[in-house]
Image (cartoon, rainbow, N blue to C red; front, side, top):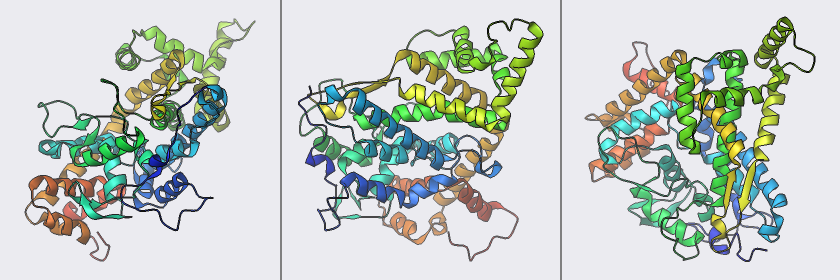
Length: 460
């Protein structure tokens, strides 16, 4: 039986706002946060940001918004199951499923236009000022950039409080407990974490959620809701990116089993890195054989011709038959949710642990890493992504050039002009570009470079 409380009053305090008359007993603090997020501009913009396949190709494919909705639902489902299965450990308490869902809704909100390629482009432009990192941008949007609340006095040199969410809500998106250094070795990848500009906010989050206690040396800050969201994200990636790829015809079970050695070796290395144990090419193919077990002949079906016909037909059905795809996706998500385990931490209840069982995690990573490497690195997808990278870089350079600030909206221009140092000016431009949707970025670039006439009556 647990003794520590999962949630205390300090979790639900907000950085800038005093308790107000809007709070009612029937509307919890987390439900207020849920509402603020759903009605925010940055949440809506996710509908215009690519997940895997560009949105203009088909309304069927997932975008960042629909992906986030799926992650939110899976995260809430994980919490619901853990509350039942681990009721004794929790001592009758419940993990807040709605809070887990909120974390899912906003976990990708920091992604710039054109996904990871836009992220790399902005990181290159911001290299001398700490770079650009999607998770850090998520915290920055929620705690600074979204236009909801301002501090009475500037905090950390900034008077903006973003959506002014509860400390426990902000904690639920802190995946990496690391301050990103402003300088890093040449050629190195950006560190995942939070910008130094939000250090004061992170310190306040930890103070409230840890209830004034210090973590043991070497232990990282990551709340149970954040861990559940992270697992849900992996599940959604592994299942639904594969589903989209099957629908698009980029993959079929047959082509997966016919994968060349180079692709399999790449996937082997990626999966081994994630799960921390050796993996073979046979492991990859065996995992897919278990996933697409319908292709295996049943008892008495040992005729080679009939086996070939059945395998070919079944492979085609996963691409052409929506019922077959949906049934497979649903069963995989159900299996993976059932593979989540939990351990209560009585000293730091908020940092209780959730994880996928080793065999389930291996399956999730195989599906995720295979789809990523087979699709994201395919020539057809890369061609569109390259264009996005160039667009983002070009826009940033134009805005940073002499008088470039005149191209930005009035409120962004004002903040740029008020900045007293190059770092703040560059970060202001970066925030503006990162907030663009794919389509807006294309239109903005067209106004700068296209030969076609662009209307001056369309707002920036």
